[in-house]
Length: 319
Image (cartoon, rainbow, N blue to C red):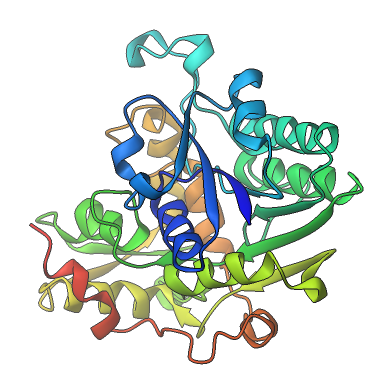
């Protein structure tokens, strides 16, 4: 089987490609120039160099394949700004990557008569949410109305060893737990009684990759949307587990009202050096829980990997 993959050089995409190769499926991967080596199994892939806004490169990636996996996604956007030296053509936006890129691939799949299409979305997407949530929602709707044999996955927080790629637990360790100040337990309002009480359902990247690849040939998954999540844990439980796994078990935590942080973020989140965006804080406080049982049962993920100190051991091995 030949499968075209978009978003293969990132954290989750790399695991998906490795799972494809493991199952003797031939990946055709669109990769930006210079990012080829970010794919662990790049020597076993058919690499097409180009950007998602290059129609010719998209077509070349999809030609002669039988299915499409669209995994392109960002958690923060950086629009054109002289201070960032980002041109209009190279700006990193939710609209461009979550929606326009997906639309281009769906339209090309229809032209090439490729029926099977699998989309990486996210738990909690909605029409009138943040830019991240609304563009993911619109991408889902476009795919659902395309007439293609689609499957959509909506994971909660994805964790796992990412090597040098961006991953939530590693980023939280670097941006919050490694600083010489107490780590924040965010909460709404100014009373700290519910600090850090919002919840997430962390799911391991290996289990996500298994579901994606198993779905390619599972007819029962066509036309369906699957949440992917593990045990429900509070932000306080998650951050303290990450701290212990990072050899920072003595780290202090302090309640932090989110409003002042949002105000500061609204001023500085356009700069890559600022650790968190205003919309990220909004989504964080909403919580992000879901039950992945249906997907794990259908795709034969018998023992989903749990979020604990042992499965976060990659954090203690980091320099």
